[in-house]
Image 1 (cartoon, helix red, strand yellow):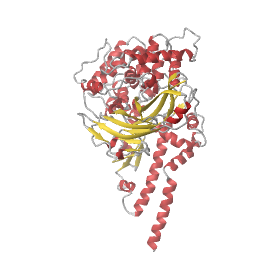
Image 2: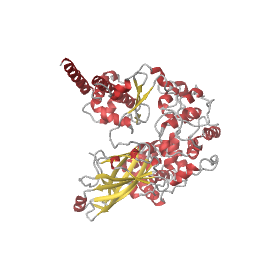
Image 3: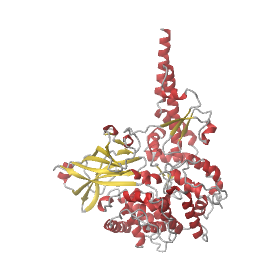
Image 4: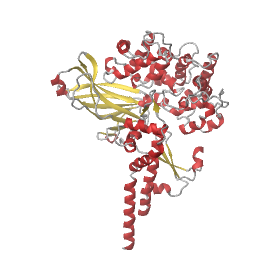
Length: 330
Length: 301
């Protein structure tokens, strides 16, 4: 909890996206299907749009603020509620003022416009209550607790990202994949999002992983998938930790993209009982010098197997095989 | 010293991180080797759009000119950044979405102008471990505020005032301002970025340390103060940028002498810039500056 040098209301501020309209060239309009945004996940999936050529997305917003508390305590005047849409990758920042609905000023509504050329991947949408406090205008007195995500390409509004899995023949693919033609899969963490490449030179591998087929095949597929996920988590962790930006005073910074998300997720298992920032500093120090990097490997492996749900997959496979045996002997 | 690539194709391209990494060799970083340009161009990916903006020649011409202009300097000074940033921006005419693709910048650094990256960023002094001076890897392939060309493009994008690149030139004149401010989210608010520049113009900020102190104070203050509310920006309109991009086809090369013009977007409201400039000046007066008592701190280079 950070300390503020002025009074702030304690009640919550919430934000909801209530409708999304896409505008294309020549006045073309499309209202995004309600399946394109989720109040539970707090995600808008603009990839669901039917017209691929949309240029702007207008998001209708509704925010609730602790109006009664603000009114009764009386510390605050010149109340303004603004929605802020940002994306790190493009340094985009769009601010929209919301207007109060009704006389109690509890609900504020408005529209924020996302211009497609200004965004690449995922924008963050938050709402802030701004007021004059102790004679100082422009003070942020409250903010929404959980941001919304506006995903420019996803077609399902989910917060957790789906891993990109592509199938490709390693023997005939891009030059860099050819030396790996004996490997069933390859995790590529160098791009905007990590990608798993499945080698189609292994006949039947794709079908196995996709879980189509007999009971035995789907059991094996399940196991294979969790193994693959372990590889992915291990690879993304190492990529994220190996590519940190370091402040002048030696403090490592959490990367702004998926690398940061991965670290936030895994560090509590790698260095338990510490804040993410502390854990990051610790892991970075061990990797870059003080010689205990090797000792950390089991913990990284543990964090990866946990994420990949290996114990669960293994348990289910063992039980599944028992059941198949019983069926065979019955 | 690393030379101009032998093979320069007609069009720019994308170079993925994994490929880029294989070309960033110790020899290149120390300026002793060239980039094998034919092999590199086999490892690239095509750009998703095919228009006049992505011709390689105009970009390489700019590089040749900036190298020529600063040929007498041991290494191109900050003035080279001030010259190149607006011209690179006005030549490429990218959307932010396009500019967010690190693969494009990696290609520029390795495929188009590795010689410039080495000349501009090779330090004069040996490494701490006594090894030969070496360019930081992140100048070739890295985040937008360190990569050699991405940092120039983003400086131009974030510090221009509509079509006016003059503030960009000022921002490039103080490298610490550039290095520190560019990584902070607060400069994404245009009046804030312009107010920082005004303080350099007013002579309030002269040295690198002063720029760092100001940037930290402004950044810290943003946690409690909504600059967007006290100093509103005009609404961003996508139309002028679209027109500017469409006009790239028939555009002549950017002027080497006069400052080019950017997209005809509305400028930031003057009042908003002034309000923030005054406010930041007050913040700065109270900010701790390393070595402020030494009045003769040399300007950072």
